[in-house]
Amino acid sequence: MSADSPPTPETDGPDIPDRAEVISLLEDGISEAHRKVTAGRVRDAENEKVRQGWIRQLAYACGQYRQLKKDQDLEELAERVEQLEERQ
Image 1 (cartoon, helix red, strand yellow):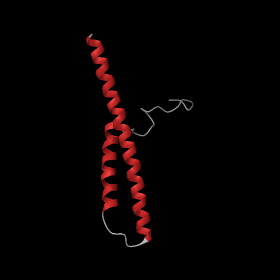
Image 2 (image 1 turned 90 degrees about the vertical axis):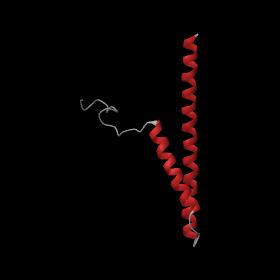
Image 3 (image 1 turned 60 degrees about the vertical axis):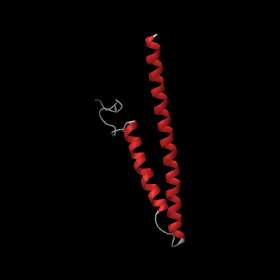
Image 4 (image 1 turned 90 degrees about the horizontal axis):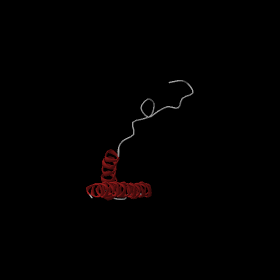
């Protein structure tokens, strides 16, 4: 590769996880965030701020998970439609 050529995913980029890996990571993160949100007592204002941060992270991760699952469902439906069209 010359100095002028852009890096390619095969040579220089970080490993990009596939959708299944991302979904698995999100599931783990959601479980951990849920545990952090529901466990323990609020002893002071700082702990409550930390808990609220975990709640925000949990909500964000759930939204990302939902979107990835929706995308996965749409791709599976498109494949099924394509298979049905090929049979005709």
